[in-house]
Length: 192
Image 1 (spheres, rainbow, N blue to C red):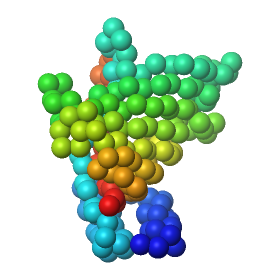
Image 2: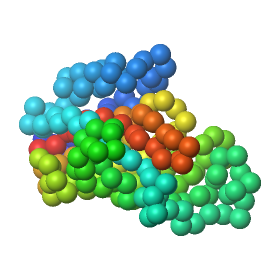
Image 3: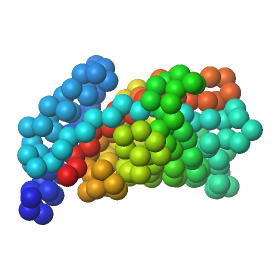
Image 4: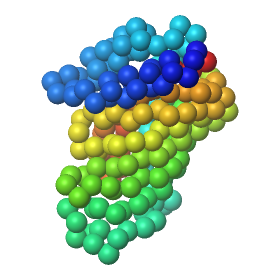
């Protein structure tokens, strides 16, 4: 595949993320995205679909989400603007607490909007067991945290996912009074 075809494919994937999901549920959005990727990308590429669950844990003695920096005005800001945290969240097969751990979601999140609660994410999904053991996926982008369905680009990967590109649809599955969250990641990856 030529560079121009690859750039065109990446551009089209990014443009598709800009389409609003108002009135659509995650299954409808997922199917539309899968159909679009199959119709517009190179036949040499593989399309892999993953459904993963990521747990953001605040209730354990060692939290998986730690604040590492903030601005002087962060905690008076209604959007927590300037808050920076590092995460090392478990990735699991299912949403339940006893579900098999596949790896860790490691990286940074930054509250980056003055207008609404919104994150900039830079995460690596590191697979340490299961069929993708030893591989990783890199997610970087805007996460409008309070929206029901968020789209974050897949911008690279290693191992099985070498030269990966794609989109991750993120949906908050549950939260509790301790501040623990479970997120569903529907990941659509084009790779060789």
